[in-house]
Every structure is written in structure tokens, then in C-alpha cells.
Length: 625
Ligand SMILES: *[C@@H]1O[C@H](CO)[C@@H](O)[C@H](O)[C@H]1NC(C)=O
Ligand SMILES: *[C@@H]1O[C@H](CO)[C@@H](O)[C@H](O)[C@H]1NC(C)=O
Ligand SMILES: *[C@@H]1O[C@H](CO)[C@@H](O)[C@H](O)[C@H]1NC(C)=O
Ligand SMILES: *[C@@H]1O[C@H](CO)[C@@H](O)[C@H](O)[C@H]1NC(C)=O
Ligand SMILES: *[C@@H]1O[C@H](CO)[C@@H](O)[C@H](O)[C@H]1NC(C)=O
Ligand SMILES: *[C@@H]1O[C@H](CO)[C@@H](O)[C@H](O)[C@H]1NC(C)=O
Ligand SMILES: *[C@@H]1O[C@H](CO)[C@@H](O)[C@H](O)[C@H]1NC(C)=O
Ligand SMILES: *[C@@H]1O[C@H](CO)[C@@H](O)[C@H](O)[C@H]1NC(C)=O
Ligand SMILES: CC(=O)N[C@H]1CO[C@H](CO)[C@@H](O)[C@@H]1O
Image (cartoon, rainbow, N blue to C red; front, side, top):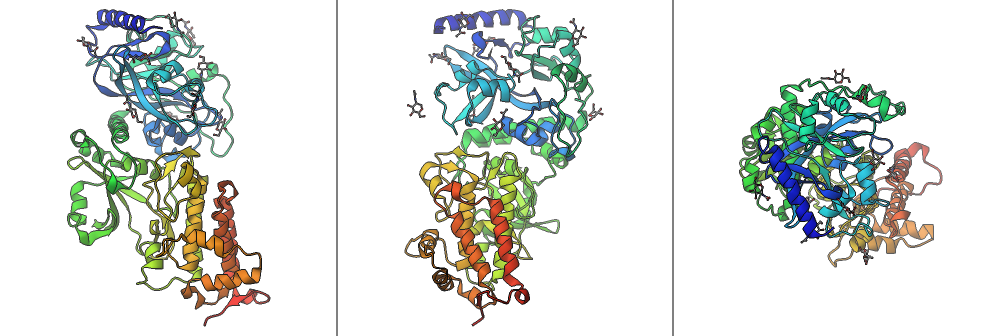
């Protein structure tokens, strides 16, 4: 199709629309562009709208994976979808109806093509993905592949590389001004639908649906249409049977009218507030995406955020803080008071301050607006070996964002091992710390969907509580999703896995590598890079490259932290831990043990380590000097 015919088409549609709809919605027209490339538009507003989405087996049967697909939190889906916030982790039955919030705007493509109305959803290409399959299956026809091609003009649809970042334009529309319509629901027509069934599903008038879709009275299967509503209908959710594998509910035909009974029942004030807040969150994500390269927060520059930040209604967020996934929203005044105005004397490290609020001590991390990624990940995780997020604060004046964590009393493992001012750690405690870290990693690697890779495991990111139990901190670089490839190398020298440094491959095995380095620190008490600039892990591999067990034991004794040598314990336990560490450092990531194997092996080392009475015969021992 030529540019000029497109242009003519565009002008034709624009003209028809202006004629038909000018009295109704003079600044919010959208028309279907030829060849399914999307809906053209001519308006400047950004609005919150919703896509109607159905949970589908096998990969989209939980809020976390659907939230990840659309870059929204679980709560942002559960609230408008009438799912209680206590079942955020419960699997959904297939075909569960959901409202997914979208930030809808009119986005210019180019001068001749005009603008398209869509929500900008980032998507990272996985093996086997094509624009067509992702549009029709994962996004359930809420967009079309020609439209994906239009908004990704630099990508060749036939030559996508894994890990490629793309935009999927989810079709949406903003409501006309002041017509009693607050949301336009993006809905994909199903074969069994007719206009009256759709109208009754969403509690809308047939005629208003026809009007909102350019006067089109016939429905085409799998086309996206817009349903104007004053408020979201309450979805009635099927009862969920925990633990039993979800039965596949018949065809869409039997199911849909049963599960969606939208009769315009209001969500109530809290619901509406939450929707607004959701909008703010989506909005903030867009802002963050536009402005920030994720890296150490100090290095970041937020572009043009100040003015936009001011628009955020902090008070509104404070009012509904209870609903925001159990997080407390702090006021900037509270934080300023708690930290003496972010005084140097309250600085813990980097940009983290200690502060007391209402008798509780917190660690407060000051960031630019790039806190969103960390928030997104932390809200999915909850484990005793991960530092807990307690709340957050937004300061639109300074365009700052603060994450407020539990305060972990005993500081970082790094300071215990290398700063030499505190009492020494015994091998028993060190091994326990290693197991705690491994348990925390196992949780993020195996029990979150999608998996989370921390990407910056190091002794200064391991904090010790009053009982010397370890917690993993600082998810600022963490990434959810697996086997992505990045060009933007982050992390800390001495802990970075070779394949990540060379090719930017992100996988859980890079955390395993870094864990191996921390284990070496625990065993040797040495820094990860010595004064000559040599890497600890490289020298460890060289030192222990011997087959002779006796020689290995001799070298281990030499290499060991002198402080450990003063204790009594089984040498086997130490050798077991060293073997795990060396295995973690394998150059080939696929040959490194999984975190599950590590937890198992270290627990075995722990069992054999300290029960001296049962462990008498044959075990080589290191006895106190
Ligand atoms: C949008 O429509 C108005 C008329 O309603 C027109 O003046 C304006 O130029 C249009 N803007 C674009 C970007 O097409
Ligand atoms: C579900 O996810 C798995 C792993 O990511 C993938 O191999 C499989 O093809 C997916 N299934 C569908 C139907 O998309
Ligand atoms: C969509 O988001 C990407 C970042 O994910 C950004 O680069 C792009 O400019 C955005 N596009 C629009 C039209 O907002
Ligand atoms: C999307 O549309 C195609 C036809 O264009 C259809 O075959 C497919 O089943 C639809 N996907 C979903 C999830 O309904
Ligand atoms: C505008 O975008 C359309 C759709 O991607 C493309 O076909 C056309 O060549 C572009 N025109 C110009 C002048 O870049
Ligand atoms: C496909 O993409 C790769 C890298 O992304 C590039 O090297 C190759 O030349 C491309 N092939 C074609 C046919 O464009
Ligand atoms: C629309 O579909 C419903 C069931 O889905 C059916 O009961 C009704 O008769 C249909 N109406 C028309 C006008 O076809
Ligand atoms: C929410 O769903 C439940 C069933 O899970 C239903 O009984 C209730 O009526 C729904 N809430 C509203 C406001 O419709
Ligand atoms: C590639 C393609 O499908 N092009 C079609 C776009 O739509 C016009 C009519 O609207 C067709 O003539 C083209 O063949």
C-alpha cells in the first residue's frame, strides 16, 4: 500500500469521523486503519482504560504472569477484576475474566501515517515468538501483527532475535469528554458473541457500543471493539479450588456468559480511587521507561521528570496505602524528620539512610524515579532471607522516590568479613549464612513467576540480622524473566559471571556464579579482588585444580581464613563447601549446579560439620591451635 493511498484513507476516515462524532467527542476520535494496523487517532490526552483478558492455560493462569505480560502489578489486575487481595498468589481457573489496566495514549507514527491509539507494552522476544503468535495467543488479539510492525519500524518481523525488546501496541481508546463514559473497555469479539450479549456482559447500551465503534453494526470475530462504560462492571469470579489442578472449563461458549455478569454494579469509592492510583502507577512506569537507564541509582539522571512528577497526587496515594499490596506510603516529612534531613550521620551506605519512625527503625533508600523496577520485583517476593520492603514514598517536588525497608541490625556480610572491626564469624555461622543466601536465591529462582535474577549478589548486599541470619538486599538491578540478553552490563567486578561479561546473557546461573564467589569469601576471608588486582575466583580455581585429596586439604588449610583455623570442626564440612563453591564457578553456566543442588549440598556440609560426638572416626579435623 502506498503512502499516498494510506494518507487518503486516513483523511477519509478522519473526515467521516469528524462528521459523525464531532458533536460527541471532538478531541477523541479513533478509526480503524486499513489492513489492521490499528486505530488512528487525533487527541492529546492520556487516559486509563481496561482490556478484557481471559486467563488461559498453560502459561497465563496466575496474576503474576499476566501482570508481567502487561507490565502491571498483580494488585492492579485483581482490584478491578473482583479478586480478593488475599488470593494474589492463587492460580486462576482458565477463562477467568480479568480487567487489565492500560495507559492509553495517541502515539504519532510518522507524518504520512498519522497517529495510532494504543497502550505501549514492552515485550522481550522469547524463543519461538513471532509478532503473529504473540499478538494472537499471548495478547489474545488485543493487537494485530501489522500494527506491531508499524510501531516497531526498525525490526524485521522475519528476523527477530531472542531477547529483543519490542513494543506491542495494545488497542485502546480514551473516552470522549463528559459523556458519562469513564472507560472504554477493549474487548475482542468471540465467535459466539452478538451485540446484545456484549452489551449485557458489560452493562452497556447496544447503541453506545455501535457509536463508539464508528457506527459499525456487524461484529467480526477476533476484532477489537470498544465498550463504553461509566464504571467497570463487577466480574463474578469462579470459585478457586486451591491445590487441585484446575479443571478446563468447557468451551468459551458455555463459560463466558456464566462468568461475566456485568450489570453496572459500582466498585465503590475505594475501587475507584485504586483505579486512579493504578493509573498513576502505569503512568509512572511509562515515565520511568522513558527517562531512565537502570544502573546504580546515583548515576541515574532522570530526564524531564520534575514537572510531570508534580502531577502525582501523593495525598491520594497516602489515602489508599492500605490497599496497595500491604505497603505503607510514607510522607516525605516523616522521612526527613526520621533522618535529620538525610544527614550524613544517618547514612548507612550508598544512598541508604537509617531512620526511626513511630518507634520503628527503617532503612530508607533514596532513589530517582527508577524505583519502579525494584518495587515491581519486591512486591512479588516475600521470604525470610530477603530484605523486606515496608513501604515507599514519593516526593514530586524533588522527583525522588524512597523505598523503606526493614532495618537489618548487624550490617553487611562485607563489613564482618573485611572491615575487621567486629568480632570474628565462626565457621558454623558462616555456613549458616551461606545456606540462608542459597535459600533466598532458591526462592527467587524457583518460586517466583517469572523467575527473578538478582544480578548483583555480593557480600555487601548480604545483610545480617540480630541472630546473624542472612538476608539478601538491593534488588535494584534485578531482572525478572529468564535468558534475556542485555547490552547493558551491570554488576560488581569480581562477582560477574564470565558469560554475562562476554555476551550479556542473563540467567539464574549468573547468581549461582556470584554465590560461589561469596562462598569463597566466607571460606577464605579474602577480598574478591586483591591488591594486585587478581580475582579471587580465578585464583581459587587455580589453587584447587589438583586431584590428590591430601594435597587439596593441605592447600585448603593454607588458604582458609585464619580466624576459622582457631576453631574445632570437621574438615569435611569445609571441603564440602569448597567443592560447592568451585562447582558454582564453572565457566559453562549449564554445568553449574542449580541453587536447589547447592542448598542440598550445603545442608549436608552443615550436618557433618558440628556434631563432634558422632563424627569421631576417620574424619580429618582441624583442631584449635
Ligand atoms: C486534529 O483535529 C483538529 C480538528 O478537530 C485539527 O485542527 C488538528 O490539526 C488535528 N490534529 C492532527 C495532529 O491531525
Ligand atoms: C509456555 O511456556 C513454556 C516455557 O516458557 C513454553 O515452552 C511453552 O511453549 C509455552 N506454551 C504456550 C502454549 O505458549
Ligand atoms: C514505548 O515505550 C518504550 C520504552 O519501553 C519507549 O522507548 C517508547 O518511546 C514508548 N513509545 C511511546 C509511543 O510512548
Ligand atoms: C486470535 O485470532 C485468530 C484469528 O485471527 C484466532 O485463530 C485465534 O484463536 C484468536 N486467539 C484467541 C486467543 O482467541
Ligand atoms: C510511515 O509509517 C508507515 C507504517 O510503518 C510506513 O509504511 C511508511 O513508509 C512510513 N512513512 C514514512 C514517510 O516514513
Ligand atoms: C538478522 O538479524 C541478525 C542480527 O540481528 C543480522 O546479523 C542478520 O543480518 C539479519 N538477517 C537478515 C536477513 O536481515
Ligand atoms: C445473542 O446471543 C445470546 C447467547 O449468546 C442469545 O441468547 C441471543 O438470542 C442472541 N441474540 C441475537 C439477536 O442473536
Ligand atoms: C465478586 O465475586 C464474587 C464471587 O467470587 C461474587 O459473589 C460477588 O458478587 C462479586 N462482587 C461483585 C461486586 O459482583
Ligand atoms: C498487505 C495487504 O493486506 N494489503 C491490503 C490492504 O487493504 C487494501 C484494501 O483496504 C487491500 O487492497 C490490500 O491488498
